[in-house]
Length: 579
Image 1 (tube, rainbow, N blue to C red):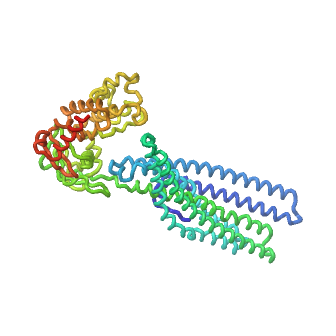
Image 2: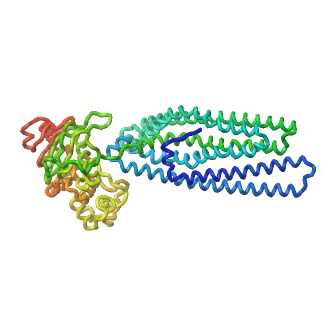
Image 3: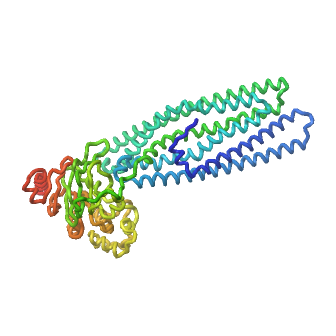
């Protein structure tokens, strides 16, 4: 079956020398096997001749032994090269996929989904490596082997040699009949794998919640149903593979049977000797050993092609970002950030922002408020250039923000998200992400400014204290403060706080807002918060409603205007009184 896939062939770059080496050693194995078959056939045929002597037996045994040793060593080397190829393929593919994922911004990750990225880098790679270590070498070998054996058999019986060669060659196009069904199943299989994997991961992350509400058995039942769907799709693949295997075996045995009939007829006519007939019998099986080897690798190739479809979605994701250093500067020469008639929508959803214009003067504090889903976090993502606007323009420090690369932009803008991500390791290692050259004094200064100075002094190992798996050794408030410290180390002039206190305890929330208050004296802040009382001192407050700017002004001005802002403030005051 010619299961050639452009994605897998592209990923084979750097592996072809290994693939060809496996095919070459397979050919050497065939050479040894053929020599052994001919030696044994000649010896068995000579037993029917009266002039057989001891020296002939010794010669045959010695030659057979050497051929066997040669074949064994070739097989041993082949296994070693296959192992090396598989290891090299895993390493190469994971580097390629990981590099591509690392090129994606938040919008790209959302498009492909974290679960798909995981299954592509883990499950898909495991399934694809066999394509390089087994299928491609078998495919090359299955073309060479019949031609080599043809020249060994044509002098015995041209009809038999042509018959076996013909059958071996028609097996390739014959198996392409199954290709359409395989392609139809490919996307279904991977959707079911993603679905089950994602549901399983959700269950692990939310196990406490499931136990709390006694829903773990229900979750387990649904997971079992999803596993059954995946199993059904796997069985569909196996069914097609088995059918193709059955057709192949029927043709192979039919060809061998016809060859034997021809040889028996030739022996009766005196055209073929017993030794030659035995050679045909033994090499007929070798004739199709390459085809059988290819067939045994076909199932791996099928799953590899299915896996390649998922990887292709990631590799084809456009990670290029508009960049033109010649774009005109801000005609207003505004000293700060200016968004002008910006619109943006996520794929498959209504627009998150519609014709939004706002200004953030350098040295000021600007707040974005509104109901959930109004576009606040989308505005922050645009400012960080995790995504680019569908319409409109953003100017930063007088430059059109597409006239600089995202990496250059982010040296001027830092962000503290709703949930700060920490990596397993030490406090020092997590902070050095922002400034790899920072010394201990600078790290401690950032921690102190973020409100973690006292906490650091209580740790015996100080900066070398382990934060645990994803920061599990720290409280929610401490993780958020680590995020602030990391942002401070970047020395960015502009800092975005996107609901930075929404998941912390009241005490930590007060401490973080005190830190933000101190930062407002030295940095330009863009604050997104559901806590209305904390943004009242902002120089300007933008009220977003359904993706548009509904109101703007200071706290006092907005309270006089009424509308959504006053409604939000009044509602929160009532909740605080009730508490």
